[in-house]
Length: 393
Image (cartoon, rainbow, N blue to C red):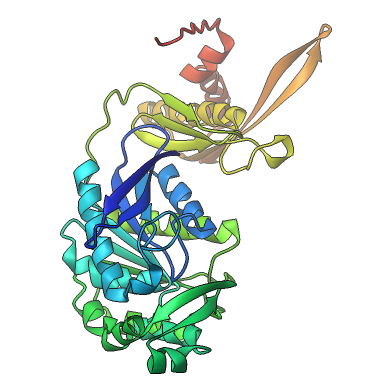
């Protein structure tokens, strides 16, 4: 993942701090705009993890801090839900200037309620995803219970939220209470995905039901099972990201063709072994097991080698069977790689096992084994391969 730091002005000319996360190699096939939860920020773990997972799937993500949070200018207490919606709109216009307009809006918690209101304002948006979102913005007032009476009487109060003190003003509460996402949800006009955990103790699952009932099709609901509100487990955040990417695929405008798609490009950023791969116009990731210092988020290099040989073997057998009109119904190739001793030195041994399904004779099966040895990748592996390496200036 490549990250670019940006700032853009909101309606009060406060500079909002933002990050644009991009796939490690190639152009994004689409851009998403992310709205974080109440009192959180763009660098919250769940936001960062979902953003990283989306970039691995080829989606660029623009995330920013609302006023008075993170590195953004302005006063948190002076902001309202309505001004946050306007900030989202301005973020979309800025993203359109530096790249292209977002096709996906993603909102977590109160950010989910915000994207429901912002979506109709942004022409480029085709799909909206909410994560643990309240069905009504006023739901957040229960978090202010300790200071709500003082806010109403004195106009403001300091309230502890997530172990931090925040100044909350009456205007913020009144804005929440007068605005409803009911009309916005009914008139969304975009594809909607609702992700919510049934054990969410901050925003109950009934909120997901409320949003779903109001929304018109196309709409989908996915349970996050035992995830907490902040998706603190990395596996939950990555699951949410993969779900959003797969679901949004059918609603996105086709991406422009990549240049030089006949070239394989591999990029490793930062520390660790997580590596982006662009090959044949397809995005993949490679990694190493945790036992050797990786994060095991993708196949290891030798796993790709085995996959290449296995795929080429299966395709070669299919082509041969079709040409000879053999009743091959399916082929499964199982491979194992190991280092063995041979005459005092270590050599690579690949064991390949074929499982051929179909009414084939013993003679036809024996011939299939011979054909497997003729697949192009097999021949390349057993031939002398020269690799020329040069440093690009």
